[in-house]
Image (spheres, rainbow, N blue to C red):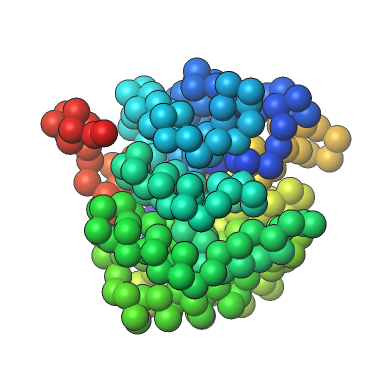
Length: 284
Ligand code: KMH
Ligand code: ZN
């Protein structure tokens, strides 16, 4: 059992439209404000998807760099960029996100049906993301949508070595239509397949958010919450903002006597050095 709970907030995602979800943070100012509010109530990592001026998902490097710099200026959060993007994004653009030099980046370990779409993650892309992150000093968070993705993780580590920082951290993304269900049973089935020494977080999409959160806490795991994954706080009650979801996760973590980790503790766990002024100034 770990002593604290690492809480990641995924504030925006690539799936919801601002027109449908007015509370979704999409501008730089909105993302920075939500990041600051979420850190104040217990988040230590922010998982970022970026939107353009028309509020549509973008991997444009200029936009991505702007958001990374703004979040770093305002918060101490570990900045984790999505390399998953949207289901329509080409592989080269997803890889190019690493040029924005985040602390960390997501790395999905296999192709999965995603509602009516397909979220494509073939082996060669997985290897390219893993090795580029090793070379660039970016810490991956391995995203697992199905049990077989954990078999791919073992094969990846056997063939291509440990990630930058040496520590393996996995996020079980549960309840996606096409992936593993968001249940205690599915979460428990994953645990024996984690690499030795790895830590895990879990994310329950939609109405699986609470059961997955409670199951993860009971199993010594960490948490990811946010409006990328959950838009309804309770039946019939839309999420007010990301901080509301982080505050609920932090409260449950405290009840489990594993309170939210500070950003320093999160960095120590994940093998991410604290940015110094000179490293921040040297960023592209
Ligand atoms: N937007 C999904 C297709 C990630 O960020 O790495 C993929 C996703 C995973 O959100
Ligand atoms: Zn994401």
